[in-house]
Amino acid sequence: MGAIFSGVLENRDGILHIDGVSTIRLAEEFDVPLYVLSENRIRENFRRLRESLLKYYGKIRIYYSAKANTNIAVLKILADEGAYLDAVSPGEVFLALKSGFQPEKILFTGTSVRDDELKFLINSGVTINIDSLSQLKRLLNFYIPKILSVRVNPEIGAGHHEHVITAGRNSKFGIWETDVVEAYNMALEAGVEKFGIHMHIGSGILEIEPFLLAAEKLLKIAQNVHEKLGLTFEFIDFGGGLGVPYRPEDKPLDLNSFAEKMLNLFKCRIEEYHLGKPYFCLEPGRFIVCDAGILLTRVNTLKVTPFKKFIGVDAGFNTLIRPAMYGSHHPIVVANRLHEQEEDVYDVVGPLCESGDILARDRKLPKVFEGDLLAILNAGAYGFSMSSQYNSRPRCAEVLVNKGKYALIREREKIEDLLRGQLIPEWLK
Ligand code: LLP
Image (cartoon, rainbow, N blue to C red; front, top):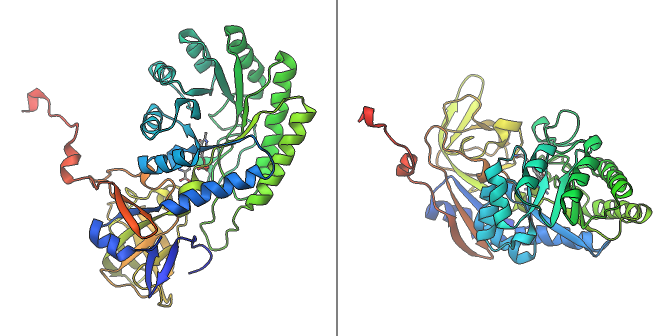
C-alpha cells in the first residue's frame, strides 16, 4: 500500500483497518460517506512536532489551526495534549472554548473583521492578531488589550496552490512592512503592554527554504520594531503551512531538519537583535490531522464509455472539495480489496450535477465492482470542515477511532435538516 499509509492504517486480510477497526464494519454501522479519524495519529503528530522543536529550544508553543478540522472531539484531544489554538472566526473561538481551551491559549487571526466580532473576541478574552491598521484603530476605540499581536506580510509566500499562498504582493493578508512600526506605535501609545508578532506564508509546503526565507524577514522586521520603539516580543509566530505528502512522489517534510534550521536561525537572530527570549510558535493545521483521517464512500455506479471508466460514489465535492477546488490528489484504495493488483484506470466521481465533481482522475485501482467501499486517504484536514449541503445533500457523519474502540463524533445530517432556518414569507403562504 506504499509509504503514503500512516502508521494507523493496516491491511488485515485484504480489508482496510484504521487504528484496529475494520472500515467495512464502520461503513455498515454508520453508513457512508463517513469521515473516520484516528485519535492516536492526531496525538502522535502533535507529539512528534513538539518533541522535534523542544530538542532545539525550550520555549515553544504549538497553536493547532482549527480550520483544518473543528470537530470538538479533535479540539478536545489537542487541548488535552497542551496545544494552543489558532482561530479565524468567532465560531472557531466558540468551539475552542467549549472544548476546553483557556482563552489565553487562543490566538485570533482574522481578516476583514467586523466591529461586533472584535467585541465578541474582547469579551472572550482571547489574544487578537491584527491584520490591518483599520482593524487596529477600531479595536483600540473599544478596548485596550494587555497583549496584542500583529500579522506581518513578509512578502515571501508559498503553498501547494495559488489559492493557499498567504503572503506576497497579491496577498490580502497581514500588514505591509512599511506600516508595521506605525501599528506597534499606535498600540504602545494606547497603553498595550505586551506584544507578539506573526506571519503565515501559505499552506501545504514541503520544502524548508520558504519558511527560512520568510522567518529571516520576519525577524528583521521584529528587530526594526524593537529598535524604533524599544519593545520586545512575548512570542514570535511563524504560522502554519507544514506540508504532508499526498502523491506517491511527494517527499515528507524533514521534521528534524525543519526544527533544527528554523530554531537555529531563531536563536541566532533573537540574540543578535537583542529580542530577549520570546516563545517560538507554529500554527499547524494540516500536519496534525491530515493523515489521521480517511473518507469512506461506496461505489454506486460503474459506467464505461468509449473513452473512460467512471466509478460513481456517494461522496462528491460537497463532501471533499479539495480535488475540485485545488486539483488536489488524495490517495484512494478499495478498502475491501487491498490484496488485489491495480489493473484498471478510473475516474472517481461524485453524485453532484457538475462536471467538476471529481475525486480522482485516471486513477489506477484494482477491478472495482458496485458495492465496493473506497477509502480516500489524507482526508483529515480541510475535508469535513470545507464540506457543504450543495445539491441539497445533508452533510455526512464523523467517527473517532482509538485502538479498536470507536464512537460517533458527529451525527449524519437528516434530510429534514435541509429545512432548518428556512422560512416562507407570509405572502407566499
Ligand atoms: N495559520 C493561519 C493564519 C492560516 O491561515 C492557516 C491556514 C494556518 C495557520 C494553517 O495552515 P496549515 O498548517 O493547515 O497549512 N483549504 C486549503 C488550506 C487553506 C489554509 C488556510 N490557512 C487546503 O485544503 O489545502
